[in-house]
Length: 340
Image 1 (spheres, one colour):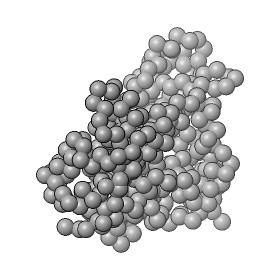
Image 2 (cartoon, helix red, strand yellow):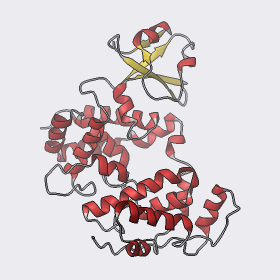
Image 3 (cartoon, one colour):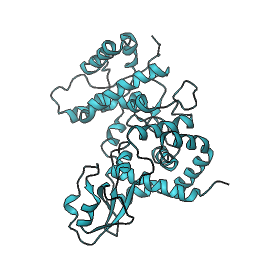
Image 4 (tube, one colour):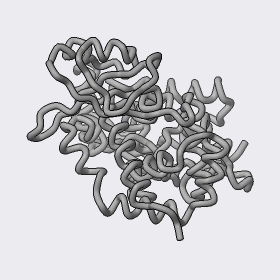
């Protein structure tokens, strides 16, 4: 078995069994002490040994130096997706990010063209995803992935199950890819590399596009580009189809059809019956999702989002995120023009 030299330290309190889960989480993050031998960590180690044949002694060493990060617990409670659209948009639709997107496209044009041809996903969407996620590699995060996933898996009860699953996937990918788990850094939620893949997404969708026997989403732009394209293709991107179109409303009788479900659920004919007019004609059998975005002065901005918009939300389950990606992609495409 591959030896990891696993180095971690988990911090906690000796006992707080009667505290509410979230209170326990906060107290856990603010106190010191080793929790390697607590029930939750011991159970996780046992599962990794039994299910995946990890070495128990190595995992014991691993969890000796993992750190529970209080700043991660704070950030997970206030994601930027909680902002209104007019504020959220300003984070990503900047001239600097658009210019950086044009340059990234210029620098990686052959890989983008090859990925678009193979996977059917437009180059501008691939570029925009990388731009929104990490500003083309400038902001990939500064938390050790093992610390982030352990913090949220062991010290954040509301989503413990999800992050323990990601911790499991992370250790598996490190074994598969011959990576020391102490090395990768990423976001406060454990997302990695230029495309900010969670470990389970890495295992399912990361691609070795240059055939060097490594799926490197940290340093190899061709692997990054193809991995993003593959992610969208596997989530049923429809090549050549629209993403979203603006909608104007004569009345407010559309409000009952607004809801939190992102999957397209209205026929174009139903939009017309609500006196909603799309900015471009759509096939009558199209299904759309009516979305409302808050503007600072102009009130609500309405959009009809199609299946490809829904695919973007599979990357991040937020309509704000998907709209930022879409609008950034258009801005980059428009400014790029044609290469000399």
